[in-house]
Length: 410
Image 1 (cartoon, helix red, strand yellow):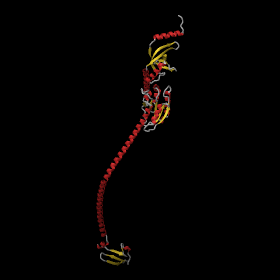
Image 2 (spheres, helix red, strand yellow):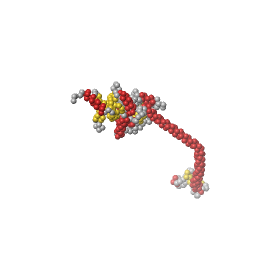
Image 3 (cartoon, one colour):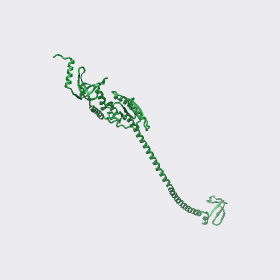
Image 4 (cartoon, one colour):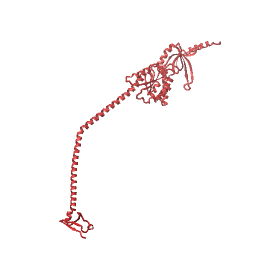
């Protein structure tokens, strides 16, 4: 047998493959590389990894020609909300091709987005399960939302229309509530999105006492950019963040992992602003209700006191009359008691006076003289002892009837 040239051999291989594998096949694989050239053709690399060791067990180049790719890409991204990028798992319909110069490759004809959706849902479930096992899944939801969430830290792209809508909605609310908003810029799509948002969260964490809530918003943009929010590191950081996290990243499909761990999830940046305004409105309504209750209670208390005062006013004359009557009776009783006491005291005093008068009368000299006694005077003074007399003293002796004068002779 004469030797073949390399071109002849590759041509033989090509014909053999075309004869043996004329049909298309549905293949499940992971995209390890995705590159779109200036002509619109997309070149990919398919790989398969061992489930236990994660080592590569198969690899093949693939191509999606521009006429197919311009239809397939938007269909896939709209259906899945996932960008057609490296790192995702896909199920594609391929035909097997062999080119004499470029070798073996798979030419993609169609794609089944439901397979990728299932894989994405599985990844989300695994992340949520891991967070639950670590005990952090609901930590942010368990935080108490401030009654007045006025100091707002926003993570968003500075140029995003959603951020402008959010600020306009807050600062022009019909109730006139005041909000202080500070932006922490971050990339909300692309490969650097996760690191950018995590860095913004770190900055807010260092100043957490200056804010009440964190709002992560993303307005507009492709739905396919949402896959970046299905990140374990981002979800874990938000789940354990010390301030309530509100997400409004603008999508209608199932929640992302970030939405699942956030304290509050709304659909759009405008809805996030409305949530904060409504929260302030609830606080204002509570204050208004408390003020009305205070006013009603004060008026009721004043009315009760007024009625009581009126009742007391009506009762005062009768109470005063009864008090005066009682006082008059007490005074009359006291007057009678005083009169009786004075009369009794006078009677006792008269009796004592009569006794004294009788004693005085019994002790008077006249009565003593009438009993036969006499009194001798010398110079008008009673003589009590003979030793005080001298011979020749003139004495006067008074009797009951008459007086006798004598001279002392010793």
